Length: 321
Figure 1 (cartoon, helix red, strand yellow):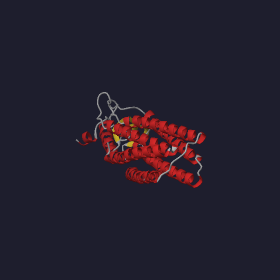
Figure 2: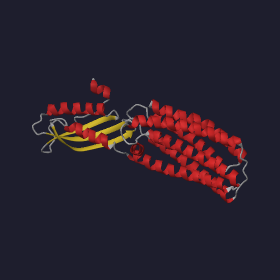
Figure 3: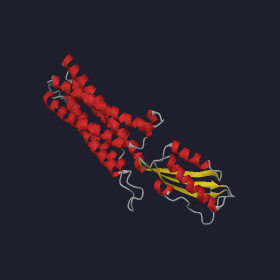
């Protein structure tokens, strides 16, 4: 578990536990469908964060005979389960808001409800700030929107969306209560509940689509692939890179398979030296690359005798030994 991820999750979890309890109490006293939708929303957030912690912790397990590339994809699995909870919470909020819209129930808005929302807004804003700071620290020079869309770590993306939706939902509840007190129209409460439900479901479906690609097996970012190709071609003995395939086995684990075409005059021992050096430099340049396989071929397309798979997976520590 990266410390930055753990800290962001714990900050959000601590806030949501208190927020959820206070919102349920406020919903019981006010009878507001929108407040109840937000209480369920916060409860779902707690389940998200517990699942994310479970996934990030499991992903730390070292590689073994059963899992030769480690268990990094556990983050994706538990992230998908968290998205399912998101969907269930959204459906509940939508149905409850629709029921309030069709059969309005009287509301009893008090100052306590406003205090609960104000505290929720402050805590969720702090949690969102923490998640954004950690994300900005790890995304590097990649533009924010591109990084958010292409990140291979769903835990941070889920945290950002979760806290942003919390703030949006609380603002909707606040507006619905103010409009009700100004007009006496009960429909505003139901409409707010429906909008909160729709937001949750749409966000869940988008998140599921992103995680699906990672579970199936998504390649590394383009800048990593291009960087590996450029590094390989920087060796005088390598004429070209015929093919390169990358696969994310977790947010912090990339497997690289590549076929390097050497100049015909290159001796086998030189190929061995070059491939070993190339493997080491790839891991130094891109720390998320943990396994590298290089297949050597010469210009005429043949593979030299005794040179089949010159690259073997090894830890970075082993490479320096």
